[in-house]
Length: 426
Ligand SMILES: *[C@@H]1O[C@H](CO)[C@@H](O)[C@H](O)[C@H]1NC(C)=O
Ligand SMILES: *[C@@H]1O[C@H](CO)[C@@H](O)[C@H](O)[C@H]1NC(C)=O
Ligand SMILES: *[C@@H]1O[C@H](CO)[C@@H](O)[C@H](O)[C@H]1NC(C)=O
Ligand SMILES: *[C@@H]1O[C@H](CO)[C@@H](O)[C@H](O)[C@H]1NC(C)=O
Ligand SMILES: *[C@@H]1O[C@H](CO)[C@@H](O)[C@H](O)[C@H]1NC(C)=O
Ligand SMILES: *[C@@H]1O[C@H](CO)[C@@H](O)[C@H](O)[C@H]1NC(C)=O
Image 1 (tube, helix red, strand yellow):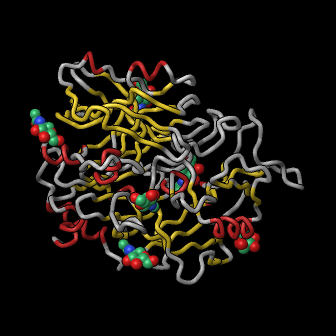
Image 2 (cartoon, helix red, strand yellow):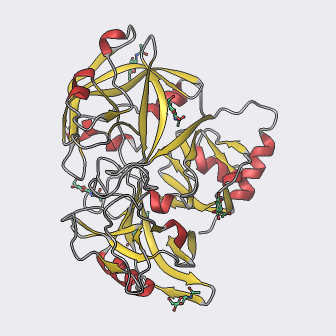
Image 3 (tube, rainbow, N blue to C red):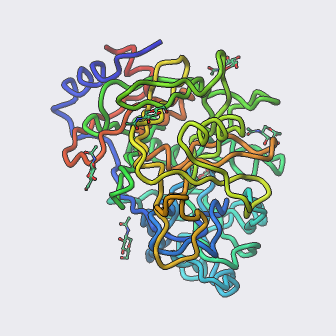
């Protein structure tokens, strides 16, 4: 079902012209570094700061008086957490973004002692207390937000360790893994404290050339995408059926250029995929990875640095797009190859050797998910070409083609009832 959300949004927008919009915008910035996140996508040894990779961060303050922290914006997890001053001392590679000293905050209280334990794909992890305190986002102040302080960490020896703003579904919180009920996440605080109308946010990373993007709580910026947004149901976990992560059905993949389009996915292809801003690369099924490399004149690395994923190299000068379909075969997001052929810096050991004609190969922005237990993930290499609206109330994700390089803005408030009432109200 293709929904003409753009037109609907325009109708809602016109209706709201008179009111001040209840939205909370925040700037985000890509920090380039080697080990790109706790999922540690790329080998820290070979990738250094000048590689156009990294995680998307934003600035917040916590506590009273406010302590400034930088956090990674992560749609793949659901807890907001910071390092304790003690934990930061053990980050040998240096933890980015600072630490939170609860003892210096007059508004802090403990909610669940030792309730927070989180593990990431690379076996790093963090643990500590769930607390409640004041959180400032952009220009607004939220009271009584449940967050966690990591007093114990593991596997953060390599840079970057960074505090995280997990903005996933409440059922994805670490406390649910400890068999406790979920707590109300920050999006609920935003609604309850009358800052936004429904638990929705939109994420725009912009392209690889840009190091800044934006996250908009409670709104949709119709200037930041082209065409219409396709509304997808979040799907449940394949085993339990529980909707606890931002998973949707990915249903087609094609390679296109000026001479035509080649279907890569098989007839009837459908796989749950996590839309995860906290993962730098995209992790696709092995068969897709290999047929893509074959089609693009690339190759898998002879020596793979990780057991759970395979990395590849492609010609740097590829032209065309990789077209992703969701809930049908029509492309919803086309990722230009210029976003997927990532140059390695001159100053480092190269993973991708020179090609036979002496020209440089580029790192491929998609990796194969070798371990069948690992999720299929569309990370930043995909999301930079997408505009995504996450609706936690209705468990919907509206996805479309990013209007990269856009400098204008047309912010539409999402009404109470979220995307569903936006669609029904038109
Ligand atoms: C966060 O603050 C640091 C230090 O003031 C600044 O360099 C950085 O650009 C800020 N990041 C964002 C996303 O605003
Ligand atoms: C803080 O939030 C929790 C739920 O997350 C609630 O039980 C508690 O009453 C709130 N406290 C205040 C002071 O608002
Ligand atoms: C996802 O695809 C499966 C079949 O592969 C289907 O059973 C399920 O209903 C789909 N879920 C959504 C939310 O579209
Ligand atoms: C589904 O749930 C199981 C058990 O809760 C978990 O081990 C698995 O990682 C989940 N799968 C996904 C794709 O989230
Ligand atoms: C277009 O794609 C086809 C098939 O993958 C390839 O043979 C051809 O060289 C490509 N053309 C351009 C201009 O990249
Ligand atoms: C966006 O701007 C960059 C340079 O700043 C340029 O390389 C790229 O082609 C532009 N993208 C689009 C879609 O115009």
